[in-house]
Length: 241
Image (cartoon, rainbow, N blue to C red):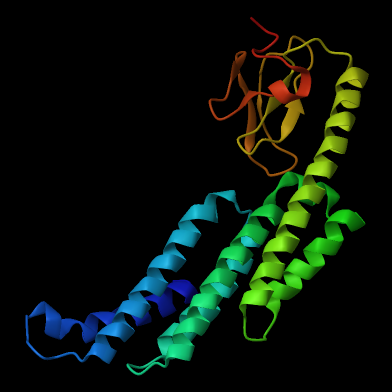
């Protein structure tokens, strides 16, 4: 069982215990403050779950581990809270949820192939460094930091788009150098391109050099999880009939 799940279950059990009085329809069990605290905890868990579900499929293994660490920290804070909670603590938690949203956006960008290929270029590295500092900062998160985080993420997105344009140019040069007709280029389930020479038909199953996913196929039949890489040479179907 992961540590995130352990803390999540701890918070859940606390909430379930708090709500036992409501389940058996006892009157007067809760004060307004009690109900407000339970409502806040439920909302925080709900927001965290929504964020994870939204981005999890777009993250690579490294980014998933980073997200797990951040979630663990928030869950520990939530688990430590008792019934009483100040208005300031409520606002602090809301701000940390906003930081979680920004962090998840950063991790999605870190998982993109263009970041993996161009992360060391200064135009990409500079905004990434600042975004990482905002994500890891131990200072209390505030509105101005959130605005800055948002702005830096936009800078990082633009830098990655610019590097992608260079990648497209290089891609065309690679296709030209290979000298193959259309339909020889394919891509793995994660979008990484590869080429099949000879007739262009898949005759064996291999592993993607970038992510290890299964590529190719058998008897000129491409794996269902793979596809023609139209972005490489404009082909819409395999070269082999």
